[in-house]
Image 1 (tube, rainbow, N blue to C red):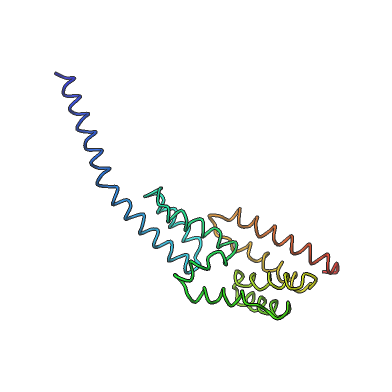
Image 2 (cartoon, rainbow, N blue to C red):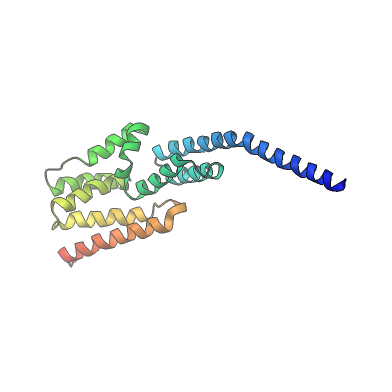
Length: 191
């Protein structure tokens, strides 16, 4: 008699558990998608740390949310190279997409690209500044000013890494800074 009650009780608990899973799955998916949407909004505003946190919250509610996984990976790429997010920004922040396109323009000479990069450094937009500075060193690899500001932009970028990916981000920018600085010293040992 006692064993029968125990079996009935366990059966009821199992049924209730599976009913709970059935009911909670769509709710968890909706919550996950809300965090995903908020993360995309932060990403569009270039608030990378907040975006990463929202994407991680989304994954807590639905670890199989492939869109969240894609956006989280994209965010980490964008932190290192904003041009990686061009297609995302075209649909989520047209003004920024336009800014990236303008920075990717064909410059007549390295000096023009450096000047455009410097103007972005001065306005505090290091991510955009790196685009024309990279073009400048490609146009004229022997132009010390290009390497000087390229190194400076990388060095300053390391200070702006999102907290949640700071170690990898700073390591990346430090390596890039050292490469650019080494090239600068090869071209002009007095710097």
